[in-house]
Length: 318
Length: 268
Image (tube, rainbow over all chains, first blue to last red; front, side, top):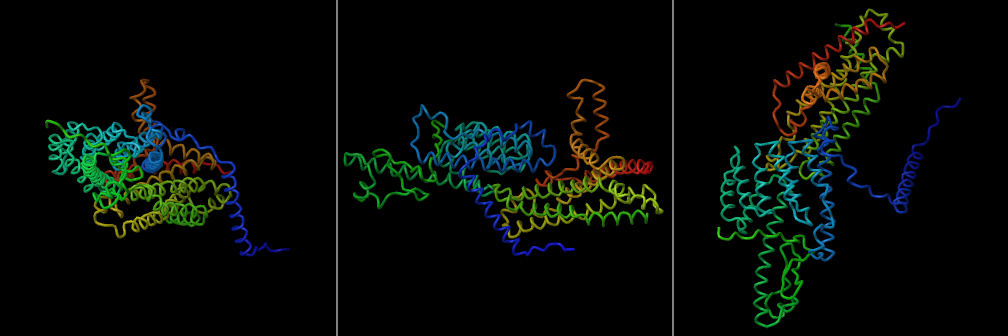
């Protein structure tokens, strides 16, 4: 009678490691020779109604999973869009109606997230930022951003922050200062809202589109944000304001210089050689400004600040 | 009472000897630990995700324990024929059912306590050294004692599931008992829909049937307060008391019914 076979542990470890390495090799070989077809991501998601019926328990956890998916989706698509924007020249306006990278699933993902967990505060607030960002930083859908925030208002009518964000979207993305002021005023009416929200409503109505007012709006958003993402978004916008101001100063100088010498400026060396500027001017992110056409200053498409936001036009007659 | 305690302790010992139980607890703790990594992907929502995942892990793995151990409590004794030895002793049949239930309830309590401790340990690690600004921005603190309310209600809910599994196992096979228990568990989350059935159906008979099912099926959704707790919303002591009382009454009904069926069962 023989006892149970006792395989020396060393043999077992060697066998496991060896087979593990073989498994990795086989996977690499398979991935290289037979790449799997990418799945149609639309098919991976259920509708809001179906999800809310099927997920009968642990809805909060499932909403987290959808939230993670929304962040990943937004991150992947903005990276692709920004890469494309930096690599290729923008298409002529007639062909640019549909951006090459779509964000079609972003709103449905956020909608499902907030349906499963109607109190998911950050999903409303970040979601609105994601949706309202212009291409290539986002889909440029302020209408969806407002719809998402209004869903948040219905779920938690005591949160003045949603009204602040709605006003912000109207102000910055829609340039509708009357609606922005009305949203700030609605938020200010809620118990516990900060005092400055009412003065923001008044100044928006009076000076909407003014750069100083816009700066103030972003500064307040950055200072009151309770998360790093929103603070970073505010910092980025403030840097973009700085970049716009530098461009304006440079443009003024270039126009004056070109008029004096009677020829347009085509390279920075024209100005450096004439002692007008000490070197190639850099934007607040440290990337050199460009002269894409004679005597016209622009931010580089390689800059993290690109594209600069469309600045709300200053109100006239206000 | 002494006999009941003896059966409960033995049931507890038997349960903790089950290797499946350790695997479930180990996996749940692993998942709770992993939530730390998952939390990093969520744009400042790490704590919410850890709490959601932790509380859900406790509930899901607790459910597996309650069902798979619950259905075996009586049927295993019958299959192994050890029931004959047990019945030959001066033990009344209802004491076997109640003792087995108490044993599994104790097992669940201990395991949930271990998983809860693991969850608080992970949250303590995350909350450690957090700045005052970040702490104030949270909807609820990392080591929020209110989470215990969700844990307690989950424990009562799982005890109800154990009572359901035990009830079915007194007259059915283990596989059928598991299927029926899961069925009742799922239906228990839709009981709110049954109550509102009259808003979608005109038939009076269907409305009465739906209303009857609403009262017969366990209302398990009311034990799930994870969302409120994670968002720092209050769960009143009165709500806790009423919900726990409902759970206790429902368990009592199932245990009485199960003990009665078991007492009349013929083991020949």
